Length: 158
Image (cartoon, rainbow, N blue to C red; front, side, top):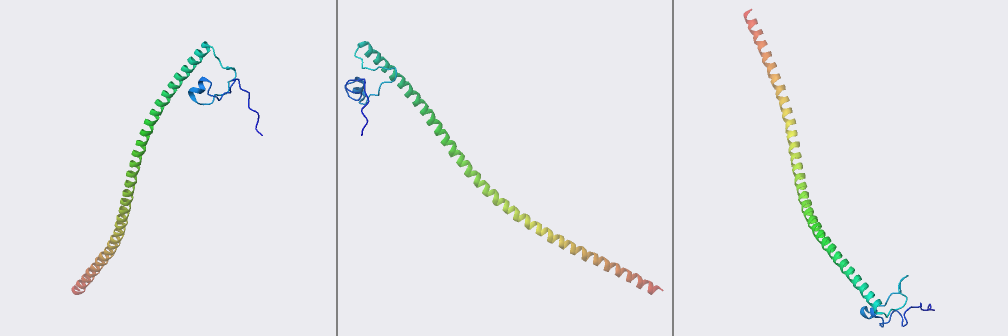
């Protein structure tokens, strides 16, 4: 069951097109606000006041629209600037990634070269150690040969 219709201060109801504002807008009229008019006015002074109020509201709306449009323009500019910064940052990120890849490859190459040089150094140190041992053995053989020669000379002289 539908609730009964709400009482309205207008004789022909708030949604008819007989009211001047409803004819202009073709929208249903709102119910009166607290403290507002309760009956439609037909006095010229009241009509002029309503027109003045409507003109003020229209000017306020125009100012609000202009302010919103300015803000929209500023926000659009800021958005474009941010998009440019995002693109610039993305290019810088890609460049940094490429540089990182190249640096990683260079590090791997240098690590391989360093490992190779360390292995060569160890081999050369081993070769030097072996050569030192051979030199010491040769020096010892030489000394032994000198001693034998001295002993032989002494044996021959005696």
